Length: 503
Image (cartoon, rainbow, N blue to C red):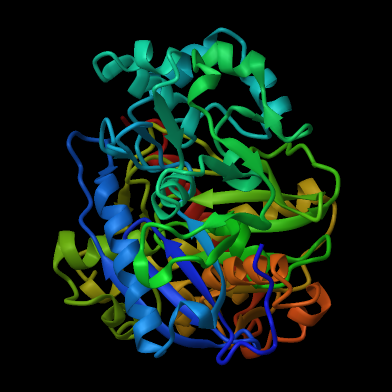
C-alpha cells in the first residue's frame, strides 16, 4: 500500500462526506485545517407518507463531482493526496447488481418508516431482547436490516437472485467504495455494519441467527473491516486514480473521532438534519436502560471501542421545514434573526416528530405538534420554538446517557450546521447546565474520516498528535437560572406527551 511520504509536494487528505441532503468533499492539511471544499445538495423523494428515498446514482455522481471540485479548488493532483476517507449517512440501504453495478431500487433512507409493521411483528414474536443483546439496537424501521428485507421481498426476482449471489447490499459507504474501486471491493466498516440489525457487536461479525430471522441471505453482504485501513484504490475516476481509500466510518462515529473524544465519558452532539449524540464508553459495551443505542465507536489497530448513542430524527430538518414547508424564512441562516425578534417562546412549543420520535421515546407513531399558540403568537415565537426543540430533544438524550453511563457530563463538544447558531448553543448550555464547546473546525464528520484515513497511511502518527490539533472556537456556559430552565423543560415534556402515539 502507498504510505505517506514527506517528499509529497503538498500532502493532503481528501474527505468525502455523503450526507442526507448533500454531498461534500473537504481537503485537509497536516494540521487538520480545511484547505478547500465543495458541496452539492440533491433532491429528496417522498413517494408515500413516511417513505424517504434517494437516487443511488445521484449519491455517487454528486460525491464524484464534489471530490473533483475540492481537489481542483486546492490546485492539487492525485499524487498530492495521501489518502481518501469516506463518511456517510448511516442505515440508508441500497441493493445492486454485482455484474452491472446498477441499483435495483431507490436507496431507502434512514428516516424511512415503511418497515414499521415488520418491526412490530418481530417485537410481537418476542425477539427484541435478542436483537438488543446482540446488536445494541432496538427493533425500529430506522435500521438497515428490515429495509433490506423489504427490498428482497418487493423488488421482482430480488430474493431469488440474492440467493444465487448475483446481488450486493450496502449502506452508502459500501456503495461509494464499490463505485470508486470500479466494483473491485465490496466491503463495509464496523460502524456502518453495527447499524444494520445484522452485526453482532460483541464479535464484530455478521450474525447467522439474526440473518435467518430477517430472511437475509449472507451472499448479499459485504466484508466487514475496521475503520482505519486501506480498503482499496480509486480506479474509476481518472483524476483520482491510485489514491488509497484508507478510512471509512458512519458519520456520527467519524464526528466523535474528529472531536477527539478518545476517552470514556467524552461526548459530542452533531446538529445536522438530525441530532446525533454519542458518548465514548470504553472497550466494553454498556447496555442502555433508557432506550439508547449501544454502538461500536470504531475499530482501529484491531482495538474495538464502544459508545452510547441517542438520535433526534428532526433537528436541522425543522429549519428546512420552516423554509420550504411554511415559507417563514427564505434561507436557513435567517432563523436565528427571526427567533431573536421575541424575548422568549411565548409559551409556544414545537415537537418536530415528523417521522416519529427517536431516543429515548422510540415512538414511530408520534407526529409533529405545535402547541401553546395564542392570538399573540408570531412567526418569531414559532422560529424560537423550532430552535428550542432541537435543544430539548438533545437534553433528553444527555440525561438518559448520564444515567446509563453512571457519569456526569463535564462538557459537550458540538459540531454540524446548526452549531454555528449562538442562540441555540447558549440555550443548550442553559438546559444542560454544562459548558457547550464549539471547535474552530466544525466540519468534524469529514475531519474524523480524514484522521482515520491519515492514520492508516502514516500521515499522522497517532491519536495524541491528532488531539493536539483540536482547538476551541467558543465556549457557552449557563446563564439562565435552573428554576427557569426546569419550568421550560416541564412544558416541553408535556408537549411531547401530546404528540405520542398519534398516527
